[in-house]
Amino acid sequence: MANETILIVEDEGDILELLRYNLNREGFKVLEATSGEAALDIIRKDAPDLVLLDLMLPKIGGLEVCRRVRGDSDHKSVPIIMLTARGEEADIVAGLELGADDYMTKPFSPRVLLARIRAVLRRHETAIPGDDEVLHIHDLVIHPGRHEVLVAGDPVVLTRTEFQVLHYLARRPGWVFTRYQIVDAVHGDDYAVTERSVDVQVVGLRKKLGDAGKYIETVRGVGYRFSS
Ligand code: CA
Image (cartoon, rainbow, N blue to C red; front, side):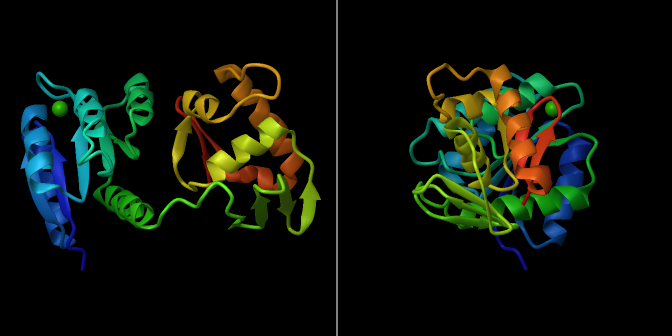
């Protein structure tokens, strides 16, 4: 049974109740806040293990809560899953760039949300591999030190930028990254990498990886993820 503490930040009573019911049933300890101010207080006082954060809150909205938590040196690493309404893609992108770990669009299935919560908690427990660590994922071997990629044992020749994009995504399988985050992490060979050129890099990467190209998934309106 889970015994992690989850803070629900939600001002809509029926959704709060649905979340509380499902989380309690799974054995999670539940804390609740119906405003951004209350959420920040609880995060500082009770240090929950994960925060479910509605974006549309009165006064201090969810994005601002996310920004303040990520800027608070004591609590910046608490996992955050955003709860958003349909049509809030710009907010989802902004939230991911502020460091939210994942998002769910309302209306959502409690079972899917619980799976996401477990996945985020699990990812949080396992440290991110170091820059130089060799990654073995699916049938790929990514060797940062040698700048070498093997697909089912066969070497694939990538440009430096393609390699960096692949390595960046594959280090955190299942995480969604925006184009902006990828641009930020990757340094172009002799030209500036733009958000649009990330798409070009991904097209090239998929082609070179062949069958394994399918592991680089497009998340519509948001960015890319390496399948977990
Ligand atoms: Ca709301």
